Image 1: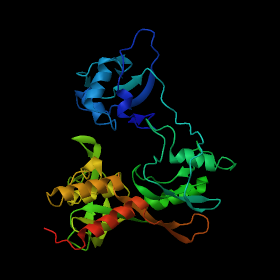
Image 2 (image 1 turned 90 degrees about the horizontal axis):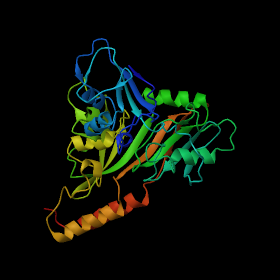
Image 3 (image 1 turned 180 degrees about the vertical axis):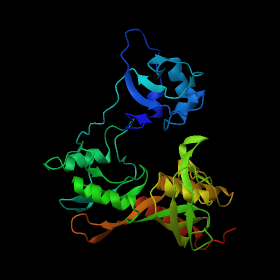
Image 4 (image 1 turned 60 degrees about the horizontal axis):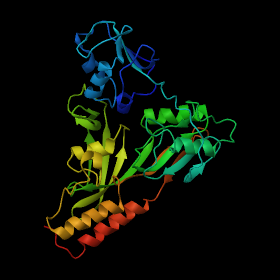
Length: 357
């Protein structure tokens, strides 16, 4: 059972730590109680399996510095976790409480009424404050925009973001301005009744005109910054992505992706799983030249394309849901941003009058 874990501890929270002294004040960042049937296992491995984005090496450093405790006492990495042990990770600084500060950041508002907002998020804008991004986020921008709304409290979890998209993904998001709206919209996402379509440029020629990718998604054990598809039905969360080819452009393909579920990095992971990494998706290897020729002019062309669209080529283009107050189905569309439009035009120009190998 995990307690007091509203924000997942970040890898950098266990970075550059110093050994604690007698006068040090410690703050609890993570607490978990081992199950009654817990088998004996090293505490560093036990925590590694439970703390998102924390490497085993960092956990070991934390233990060496006296920050990992079992039943109130510091333990070494080799300590074997026993049933009902209370394991805590302490730090010499308090947890960041994520108080949202209003900031005057421009918003591209597609629609707004007294119950909700739909915004078109640009690539590069972090959605929610977190470690290393406590300011300059979409949530800070919303707090500023709604600062004069007496019914909206940016620090109230009952209102605000209903779903998220990655920092370097552009596109549509819906924000609830009332608790009832958030509950109603949240249920639609949970029940998979929302309609979400994305545009993505992927490496390689997608042979089938349309298809469906079904595969559980969980954190990659070899690289915890990545997600991966697992065949074992007991691992990860069920995920379904439908795709349709819009245009084949020589060594890349423009596809439309429809989400049936909404897992972390879902489109990026599912497209990689079928051999088509998103163009310039650095985390999953798409920033390398994966298809094409060995000619220097081609390499220069692709590198120029990377410069034009310096992020994964993914845009949340359409969003549909039932309005929580009127009960009517509403549907919003946003055009592809300039970086993706220019990128696709460059590929169209490249393949015209060229015979591909």
